[in-house]
Length: 140
Image 1 (cartoon, rainbow, N blue to C red):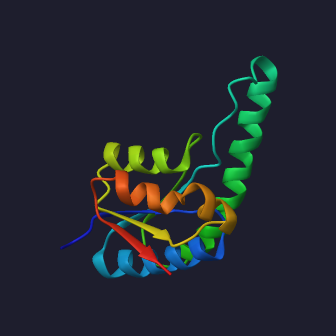
Image 2: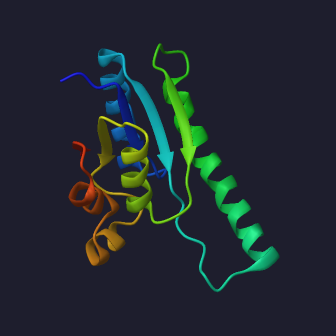
Image 3: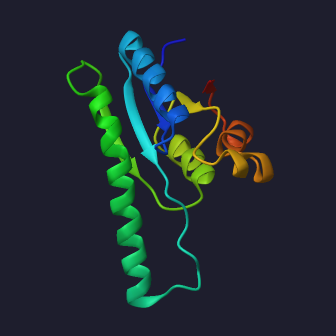
């Protein structure tokens, strides 16, 4: 199977870094486009008005800061890549982006930043794996 567009969910964790490196190698051998997607989460519904705008701006800036570290991964290579920051539930945002943008493969780390959250609530990777229609590659 030839992949044309590979999506990597990134969060700044070492697991996401390994997944991004693996995805870069795949994209390079397949001639695929690589999309680096960071989802900082939801803005609580109780926050409104100017305060909500400030929170959204802060989350967007945080996302761009996190993703900037991954840009170096592709700089100087022949891999075509783009960077996306989307607010919302990370698993939902990844699944939605993949469905709306013709993603052929999702690559994710086996764990994210919070090992405890993964144990108690179920990891983002687990949710994507069970809710997505495209193949998901999990990197340890």
